Length: 243
Ligand code: ZN
Image 1 (cartoon, rainbow, N blue to C red):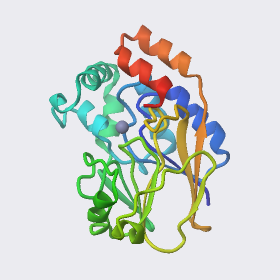
Image 2: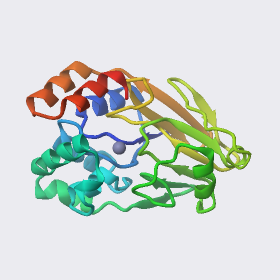
Image 3: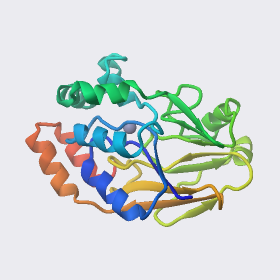
């Protein structure tokens, strides 16, 4: 079984299509939230995720904000501007799908959350200290999360020793057949690790193997769409920087 694991699409349909084309044949798609926010194609991204990942999707903070569940004041000004714009784009059918999403999902030996187990929609997990607190709450062997937009792998053993997470890059394969791990595939639509290529991960439970991948897409075309939509310049520029 090959499972495509994606996070933080953020309305970037070109990146999502590039990821799907590069992933090859997959049996399932799991989505770790933030389908919308920032990017120019929120409707198409919701429709794509609804069709292909469906109920194996968890809610992100931008998705929650578009439903009016959290005050927009909690976001920085450019994110807030993009969220207001995104809310105007979504039809009731798109909101209905986002409304249906849980904050946490357990699929066999994996728990899916957007942020963390401590605060499923909100907490950013960057450090081994944050990871330790979340291992205490983890009831499955593995936890896949997103939200930071940075690929991350850390075993419980390494977290307890205070070791930093690894930051897997394109083509890196990590074997996790024994022990417990927190894992972030990185972001499809707005990477923040300095590599602007779309990030995704293939999970093969039978082999206990995670394969991290990066794929180029037409960033300039997405930037042009964002400019035409009047989205903030800062968001347009950061796509090319991978930050
Ligand atoms: Zn995000």
